[in-house]
Image: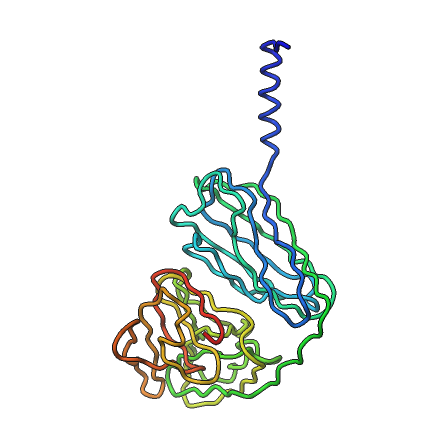
Amino acid sequence: MKFSPAWIILIIMTGVVISGVQGATVSIQPATLSPGNTGTIDVLLDSASTGISGYQMTVQSDNAAVALVTGATFPSWAALSEAVPGDGGSYALRAIDLNSGVEAGATQVTLATLSVQAAGSGTAQITLQNLQIDDDAGNPLQAEAKSGTVTVSGGTAPAEPSTKDIPVTLQTGWNLISIPMQPAAGFEYADIFKDVQSAGHSILTYDPSSGWITIGKGDRLIPMTGYWIYTTSPVTIPLTVKGSPTGPKNLNAGWNLAGISGTLPQSAETALSGISSWSYVVSYDSARQQYRDAGIKGGQSQITLTPGEGFWIYLDAPGTLSPGA
């Protein structure tokens, strides 16, 4: 059978039209969990024909009684990344590809891995909103967003962890603290410090990608995050917690403010053993209002990190501080 030039042109045009309507899809993978368990779910981009330079999105469970998102980790290509908790259990995810880790033609690209806590039997949709992806040229990449279903069934939810009191003691002047355990109901927000006489100083934390961040009374306290708090006189703030943090602390390259979890002091080498890229750690003595000697990875002198105290930590590449690590 012979094709006339007109038919050939029509076939070529048809192929162009067909390929042009094929868009990318970002989907949250389904998962099945037992009540009380924690699992992980990948967020996948099925195709990146022109590569990607970065993205941002918001993820959230539509049924917190069944499952909720408790954090996120990022793949190695995401040189700069963050998972910022928001209202209603949402997380804003952002990542930047600085080293061309996702090149043109890549498929099945992992954008993030969500930590999900199963609360009770049933189903919940992990929704994806405010999606924006830029390709290698900085142009918007059109992609459809698809939610993922979390099914929680079988088994028996473990007993709710018992609560305990670990009051926060502040010395006159600046204090570098952290929350080493999961805050119990009524203690999740920075308004627990509302009665501190701060002489007008804000509560602060720091992220190398954002710089200094001011913490308001309505902001949620994130375990294993370092916070600077100023007081004009010594004060003890009640704090009730309910077990270990529910997710890891993501750290970016550069200086970060962090803290370890648990109740017992540990050497820096032990506490940070899960982070291969850390180089330096510096803690602060609030009683003396001065920094302690820095700890150097692999150095001869060991320094001790104490739960409840924050510290500066320098990373050569992004890393994750896990509870109990």
